[in-house]
Amino acid sequence: MSGTKTIIDAQNGKTFEVPEEMLQSGSLIIIDSRNGKKYSVPVTNGTIRAMDFRQMKISDDDFGLMTYDPAFLNTASCRSAITFIDGDKGLLRYRGYPIEQLAEKSSFLEVAYLLIYGSLPTKTEFEEWSHNIVHHTMLHENTKKLMEGFNRDAHPMGMFISSVGALSSLYPDAKNIFDKDLRQLQIYRLLGKMPTIAAYCYRHRQGLPYVYPDNTLSYTGNFLSMMFKMTELKYKLNPVLEHALDVLFILHADHEQNCSANVMRSVGSSQADPFVSLAAASAALYGPLHGGANEQVLHMLNDIGSKENVAAYVKRVKEGEVRLMGFGHRVYKNYDPRAKYIKEIADKVFEVTGRSRLIDIALELERIALQEEYFITRKLYPNVDFYSGIIYQAMGFPTDAFTVLFAIARTAGWLAQWQELILDQEQKISRPRQMYVGEGKRDYIEVKKRE
Ligand code: SDX
Image (cartoon, rainbow, N blue to C red; front, side, top):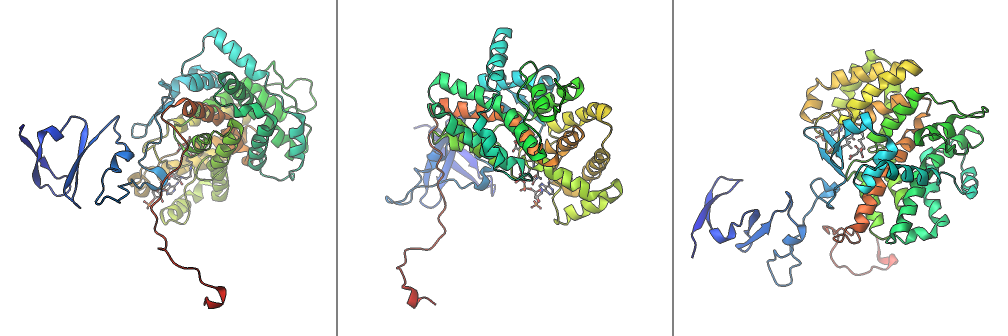
């Protein structure tokens, strides 16, 4: 029989012997101290399968062990080849391409193709891709009637989420999610119509007539035209602002298994159509801890009011009274590479729009925060939302429209994540388990006997 190997207990430093045949390379040896049983659990890609714990029982009728991970701090829900993030190094790559290179050289529509299909398109592929999306920018006229039902001061995210979900009722063919051509058609429709919905939300609230898509313009240029065109025959784009917004869309396009991507996958896993799945993902993005943070950053900067008040605000943050919106990240424990790039875009935009006074408050906030122990020990750095809102405001977007802009861009990532889920043979309907901590069995009490 082969020998044993001395193993060191990581928690108390004690040593013990384990049979060598159990020490297969790339596995965990688990000893269940409740009954002395040993298990060998394979490690794959730095993960162990949660289902491997179900064999660990202490009696025949034992369900077996589960893993418990509130908010999924340490749980991989899928295999994905779309986006890679190294939070410690502050790296972000879409399908292997560094975000800095894509921001510098690509366009949002090309990045959307890359995220969804996994490779950069050839010239012909891109022309076909653009043609198809551009020819799906129009909205069914009924969508306008839906929007008319909203108050003038309705938050645009409420309108956006409702309108996206409503599109599901217009395209029943979207339910055929395993039909490749029909799935492709919904991808064209969703990418094509998001900017139109976003613009219509804005125009409704401004009391302005809707502007129909101008398919002679770029994807982002057409969005700006639908947002800001007035009585002129053709909207005159400022190329610096058009490009800046396109780069911002690239930077917001995907971010692996963030909260809203997880929702897109979870709703999609029930085989719901991509319209209602994307409406659900947009709802998740709306939260102030997620995509809603860019709007909250503007409110925070306005509340601070001036550079002189920054130190007092940071004190309130350190005392736990308020959060520094636009700071911190579940994955990045270094500077969010997107925030770095967005800061550079700000200077270019301000050359056109004039410098925003809020940028000086934001820069002072960052300067002070990055030298404070509270932020350093918690590895809190500016994230994608810290500077983006200042640019959006300078470009003329209302503060409560910022998350809608995030949703337009993230539609590409949500669709890529959704399609990857649909095609993943290992996936099935998402249905987590729970740790039940409620009452044991008890009998019904008539109301007259209740206290
Ligand atoms: C996005 O996941 C993604 O990839 C998201 C996103 C994407 O592209 O999809 O990157 C987009 O959502 C960016 C994040 C936008 N949200 C904000 O800017 C809101 C402010 N930030 C946070 O609330 C917070 O940092 C989160 C939500 C982003 C991350 O929260 P975690 O990982 O759950 O961390 P936590 O709340 O457990 O905080 C850890 C500690 C706590 O202190 P202690 O309890 O240990 O004393 O850090 C503190 C927190 O109080 N902390 C903050 C803080 N963020 C965390 N303290 C002050 N200000 C903050 N912003």
